[in-house]
Length: 485
Image (cartoon, rainbow, N blue to C red; front, side):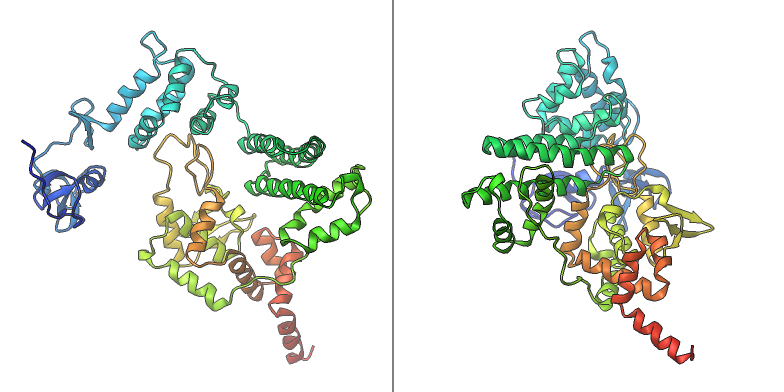
């Protein structure tokens, strides 16, 4: 005989039509609320002890004793008070058992080459993420077994030649982060793989020309920037777009019945006038091809923006005011990144790569540095940044061995991706370029343009242009006339 179905609402979230996990003093609790409650730790308001806080006491999370929950959540093996995963065992012990079997070298011991990764995974603060990752990713699980028992070598080639390389990419990044594999720039590697896929369907002469251009121009530049420590995610994306436009330009010549050697100025002009402005990104390819004799001596003009995007100062202040609203629901990392955009006019490419040591706490005053200068973070934004630092995201797993990023990402050893922040800020209605320009214009009206440039890591030309665009030149003229100089 089947068990009767309870059709009431969850006592925690008021949802109906859900599966229930247990009954506590306040009523039936659904599985989602049960999971959230049994993973919450902190200081109990009833006994003032650091405990697991699954219950409620006057609406506040409380320990089992103070909340009257008749269940002991202490692990029977390690004594840790946590969500039970298997009978009597917490997630940490279950993860340790699972990984011990997975990393077994075939002789009952942890495979020596994988020991640093095993230690990092079993000692991370939140074991649930590792268990979910392994139980849902059979490719990574099987590859770990093969590596542990020596059926496959622990090398970059093993990951590159895997039948589903994207499924084991995170495991590879973990191995790099914990020094099981030598460092390699995955963006450069991805660009090379993308390039081969992109040219595979091109005519032979076009494919050869595009390979030469991409390797000699983009790949050389990426490697030089990597050596100098200046390789950015934007470089990789710009290289892809530039190469795509180069392929498009060659295709444009073909539709006009011309090969590269037969290109005319009329072909270039038609390319630029008959399509979107992104076609201007083929300029680098055309200039390179002309210089190396692959194209005749044609001219490809440089495109300049006709207008400068900028939001009003009222809009900028409105965005800043909205960031002080705790109910906005914005992820903390995006929240803080938005502050650096709106207060200091920093681009997202620079914000997402910020280091923890760029934030300083001196005599109770929080400051930020983009150069050698330290800039005060004004109230109430200082409180927002402090709260973020106290609960730095993505640092409770083995993804970061020794995190130094201000905005640590989900990828091992990497900062948050700029697109993640960009999408969330656009969802909030923030025009990124317009906001950055508005911030710089406000700053050059408060301080001399060279001072702004030195403090915010901009060139003097950029800040002086913002000074002129903001009308500061006319303001200076009025001030000079009024003093009789």
